[in-house]
Structure formats: structure tokens, C-alpha cells
Image (cartoon, rainbow, N blue to C red; front, side):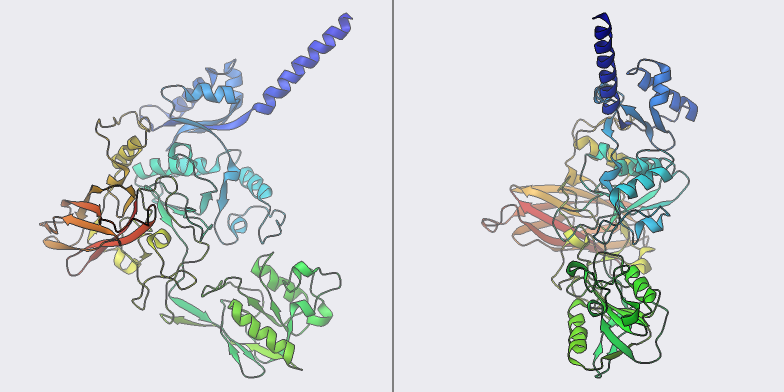
Length: 573
């Protein structure tokens, strides 16, 4: 009986230990800004002391520490139980504690995992790689720093610009977002952080990396085409594009991938040129029409080449005017989705279908550009609708294409600031923008104060009179749920001609009245600041049926040479 009691006691102890281990997760403990008075070793010792306060011993504290952020960011990642994480979050000097969730982030680059030299994961059947394998590989490459994003930004000291094509899949408070935390401290050190807006469009409120101190960049077209048409045997020419260097010198037999597959290829993947699906006996020496989906486009070309094909024509998956241009391993071109039907119809109705692919030729300023990519994430800002994310915050940008018409989406409809932000970046004018909206690290801390965060930097005291988020000195204006009248203030800095006068022009959103005072800004020297007030008021009865809907406009300052234009987005309560 005594032995049975001991066995039960042992099992209970093991069960308790098992539950404790199962509860342990990696958490990020964010302490805020460095005071600058401690060495790196002293900062790490401080992190150990935090852990010691919730652990049983200093040895356990040291063993639980995963990574100490001590260069730009002050914080650490560690294995903690939920109870330990809660105790740390209650400490006065701790800004936030949040679970490290690497799967909350996704890479946004073309062929992302190859680009960052990670091991290839298993296909997810949707043209991508298995996310679990992706993230495990990313963590492995990060030498165990569980929140890779925080770690990358923490070691960024000494660089001038960081470009991060990574987005969180969901929104989190600024102090629980690794990218936002790291970017804020990078900005203090004059490091520009540019991030992807995301690839979850065109659904609304899908934009990510929305912190106002981040340069958030959407996806759009460029001002040139890489023309490589398909010439069919009946003389019809189908427009296509490519950047593939390989060329064809003559006509070749033309086939549809679904007609030249090996036995057993299932109906749901027919015509897609997936690995191992094409029959070499039926493909050799021919041009193959492939449909998009389920694999990388480049891999489709690899399959055609494996089967002995002379080239391939790829159907672009996007409707409208968008097209994906890539380099392939054999002669290839991409045609618009509706044009692929012309090619297939020719194959079906000609007894001896033939085709060739014309070598690529780059045509600059030939097309109506730019337009927004359909997958580019859009606003409004789901975390703070009073901040309208812009493409650039101190440089020149435009809302019109190279034909002088408004930027459109991929369907040809006029795009809004929720899609293009402040517009497309104009590098030739960026060196001479005229005026800039100069938001500083202190401005961003004050913005956080208005969001209830007051302990990021212990040396900064939140003002008694908090400013509204709309008052952040930002080169755009967003007001959510306006009720009556609202006035916000902005300050611009002259970086153009010393003695200059800028006059304002306003295009008010439909249903609203906008006044900007003063209407002229006079500068006597470069570096001078001038402030102005923007008053927004609902027009009586104009918005009765449009409660909660956004209307868009703009205002612009011009000295006759420079045009500094800012988008406006307003919704009514």
C-alpha cells in the first residue's frame, strides 16, 4: 500500500512537471528605450534579474533566456509560463510582454524563401511552401532568436535604411508588434525602416505595418513593358511579356499542356505543367500553353524543359491589366488571361497549330502606368483609422499615371488613397521636394501617449494635454467618424529655395467643407518651419446616407516649381 502511495505521488509530480513544461512558451519582454548609461553586459545582467524575480533561481533564469536585445531595443525573449509572463508585465518598468509567434509573420518577396537562402519546405498545394517548414527554417537561420524580426532590428545599428518585406498576418498593439517596436528605436537612430503593406488585397483593412514611423509600401506596376508577343501560325499576334533571355528562331508545333500529360494526371491539376505531369514523347520540340496555379511559374518552365519542350506560353492568373513577368529557363512569355483563350481556341481548331515567341524588347513610357496590383493590401488602417498610411512621408509622390490620368486598380477603376497612399514615388524629384513634414522620435512618443502608451522611453514625459492621433505631423489627413467640425494642425519645413512662397489648393472630399489657414506660407531661408491649420466640416445633410463611408480629397502646397500634395480621407459618424 505504501508503495502504491509513493507511485501515485511520483505520477502527480511528473504530471505537474509535464504541465509546467507544456505551458512554457517563448515570450518577448519589451523594456523600452535604453538609458545609454549601461554597458551591453550590464543590460544583459538586468534582463537576467527580471527573470530571476519570477524564476526559482539565477541558474533557471539564465537557462530560460533565449535572446537579449541590447543594441537598439531594450528587452529579451525567454521561456516563460503564462503566470510568469503576467508577473513581468505588471512590473512598472516593463512596457509589454507578448508571446513570440513567428507564424504570425509572412515574407512578401518574390520567391521569398529562396531569396533569404532558406531550405525549401513542402508545397502547400497553392503555389507556395508549407508555412511550418518556412518558419522553422527561418528560426533555425536566426540562431535561436525566437522573434526574428525583433532580433534583426536590434542588430541594425550602423545601417541607414532597412527594407523589410515581412508582414504580420494580424494586427497587434504597437508595443506588441516586433516590427513596430524595432522600427521605432531604429528611427531614433536615424535609420529609415521601409516595410511591405502586405499582399492581402483587394479586401479593405488588410494593410499591415501601419505604425506611422514606418515607410509602408504597396505593390504596383512600372512605367515600361517587356514586349514579347506570340505569333500564331494563322498570323494572329497575341501580346505577351517576358524578361527571359532565350530566343526562338522559327515556328514550332503548339500544344496545350492538358493534351500532352502523362496518364493519371487528375482533372484538378490538368493544364498546369506541374512537376512530372508532362509526357516527353508528346512535348519534345513543341511550344506548350500552360495555365497558372499550384506552383511557381518558373517551375512550370522547368517542367516543360524537362519534357523536351522548345518553349512555353504562360496564362497570367490575374484578370484585368495586370501581368506577372519573370525570367524562365527556356523561351517563354506571359499572356493576359483572356488572351490565353485565343491561343487555346487556335490549338483546338487548327489541324497543324504552330507558333513562335518574339524576342523581348523593352518599351519605356509606352503603357498607361502605373496601376495598383490587385493583391496589394489596402486601407483603412485597422489599428488606428486616424492615420492614413502613405507611400512616402518626406519625398515626392504622385497620384496620376504617365498619361496624366488618375492611378487605377487592376480592373481599371480609379484607385483611392486606401490603395495608393500618397501616390507613386518619383525618384527624380525626391532630391528636391520643396517642403517636408518632419515628424521626430518625440512626435511618435507623443502619438503613443495618445494611444495610452507612456513608458516606452523613461526620459520622455507625456504631456498633460494629449493630442489627437490626427494631429501627428503626418503628410496625410485621416479623420474617422467625424461628428461636426474638427481642426488639425500641421508643420512643414522648407528644404527648397531660401526665399519662397507656397500657396495652397484644396480638393475637398465629397460632402465636406475644408478650410486651410493661412492660405500662403512665406519662407525666408532653408530650414524654416511654418504651421497651418486644417478645418474639416460636414456639409449639412450631404452625408445622411453615407454614415461610416470614406470620402477622399487632397490639398497641395506649391511655389510654382514644387507641388507638395497630401491625401485626405474622412468618414462621418
